Each structure stands twice: as C-alpha cells, then as structure tokens.
Length: 377
Ligand code: LLP
Image 1 (spheres, rainbow, N blue to C red):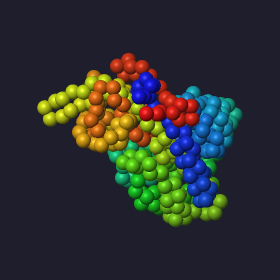
Image 2: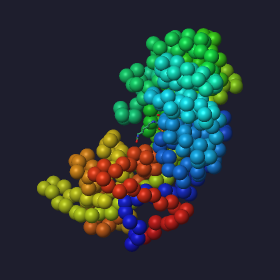
Image 3: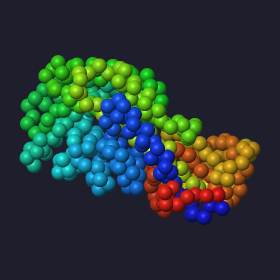
Image 4: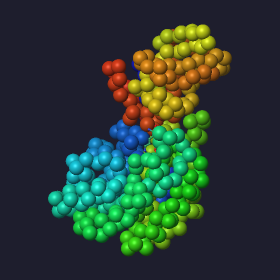
C-alpha cells in the first residue's frame, strides 16, 4: 500500500537523466545549443540536474533569471524573453550579465537602451520576430501567428532596424522565434525554417550582422504513450535540412516540455465514488489547482490505477474543487476503483507543478524524487 500522503508529484530522475543524455548527444551531433525553458518546471532539484548537463537557461521573468543563477546557470548562458519585462527585471538581468535579451517590441528596445545606458552597460539583444507560422497545436499555446501578442510583427521590423542603428547601449546579435508548444508535426519546423531563412537574408541585406539565431522551443511529447522518448534527433535534423544560413551563425533552441514532461507523474487517492444517472465519478484528492492542464486546455493525460489490473469500468476522474472544470478525464477506462485507491496521472513533468496554485485555500502540493524515495506497491 502506498504510504505517502497524496496528492504529490513524483519525478523519475533516471528518466530525466536518460532524456538529457539523448538531448545532449543529439544537440552535439547537429551543433545546436540548447537552453532549458524554466517555465516548464523550475523546481530546484530538477533544475540542478538539468544544469549539470551544461544546458543554458531560457527565462521569462526576473525571478526565473534569479532562479537560474541560484541553480548554477551562468549569466553568459541565460536568455530572457517575455512581452512585458518590467524596468526592474531588465535592470536585474543587466546586473546578471545575461547572454541576451529577446526583445519583443520597438518600445522595449528603446527602454532597454535607456536602462542599459543608465548603468553604463551595453545589452546584447536579439529581436523576437513574429513569423506568422501556424503551429498546428491548440490555440492557447500558439504564439507565432500575426494575431498573437508575441514578437516584433512584420510591419514593425523596419522601425526596429532603424532604431537599432541609432542606439548605443544595445548590441544586436540576432533573431529569435518561438511559434508555439506541443508541436508534433515536424513540417511545422520546416515551415518555420523557411521564414527564418527569409528574415536572416532580410536583416543581413539591411546591414544587420546576424550571428545568433534562436529557434525557440515547442517540441511535443507523446501524452498517449508516456514511454515514448522525444525524438530530439528528428527535431534538430529538420532545422539542419531546411535552414540556409551562412556558416558560423550560432543556432540555439529553448526546449521545456520535451526535457521534463515525461519524468513527472501525479499521484492522487480516491476519496469518494459517486454514481450519477449516466456516469460514475471517482472523486480524487488532487484538484485542478494542483494540476491545471486538463482544466485550462482540455488536455489529455493518461491515467492509470496504481496497482494495475484489467480495465473493466469507465469513470470520470474529478477533483474536490468547487468548479465543474475540475475534471482530469472523462469516461476513462480503468480497473474498478474504490475509496482509498491511488491513481496516477502521467506525463505531468512540464507545466504541472509550476502552474499549481492554492485556489480554495488548499495546501501547496509537494514533490518526491525517485532518487530519494521509491514509490512501491
Ligand atoms: N520559449 C518561449 C519564448 C516560450 O514561450 C516557451 C513556452 C518555450 C520556449 C518552451 O516551449 P516548450 O518547449 O515547452 O514547448 N502551459 C502550456 C504551455 C505554454 C508554453 C509557453 N511557452 C501547457 O501546459 O501546454
């Protein structure tokens, strides 16, 4: 019987390590540098493991920059994106001597120039462009079409280039793109590559020296088969096959989900069983506050009964929160469930623990790690 109090996140550190080994091997093979996107999971133990593989960090807030630094990432390996960086965040990042700001608007460029001037620094910047590429993922996590708030839009590029030429406290080093997340169709990255080629030529022809290109993140994981490892090789290859840049341009990506998604599971216990006219509910002790993806995106996550067995029944797995969206899965086939049984929600290592909150004034959810305690039947 499972002794630990539920609910909790459980991280399989062996799986994380083997995934990181695959990632590092593939990135070396294709000569593409990887930053880990902290937003997917900034749990310190997880970050310490990731940092030990020599990856850089991709941050989207001042606190993420601080967390990256405190977990051993060096300023020179940190990039900082985000449509709404505050003055304080920019000044802090300048003080940490980060590698590069990914700048999302002409006005932000002006602000960074002024702030860098005020502390006698020159900020390295890359323009995050909005390439208007469809990511073929769900709308909520599509970021690179012309209706999204992200990046410098096509009509502002000229103003950005002429601004850059007159600014003394920013140094333009290149271009950044990020078109969305949970992308499983590699053609999407081929389409992105065509836009990257176009903008690379455009900037170069307009007198801007592009030495750095960051292609963003977005590689999806297989939520239906938690045992299938992400294919980093295929992901890098598609860029190498389709990008047409001068030699010496440094290529970077910033992956989150595919690095940590599969190493985390959520353990939760059945509190009550309830039969309705057409359904049976298993009411579990984790709520949408502990794990928001199904409520936010109607996302699918495989659910298993901890002790296994043959699936003979259909249940809606729901939490205790006072909202009908507090539903982890509908009509899922499982072995018979009773009060006290433990069910495991799979593949929650990315955008799981980081999105947890205390709605309904519930407790903070805790985490365990396979290298410090084993979850055993
Ligand atoms: N770079 C930037 C600028 C990003 O905005 C993101 C993710 C990434 C990199 C990492 O993307 P990844 O490799 O993880 O796909 N909460 C949503 C996902 C939001 C993604 C936000 N940006 C979810 O649970 O699906």
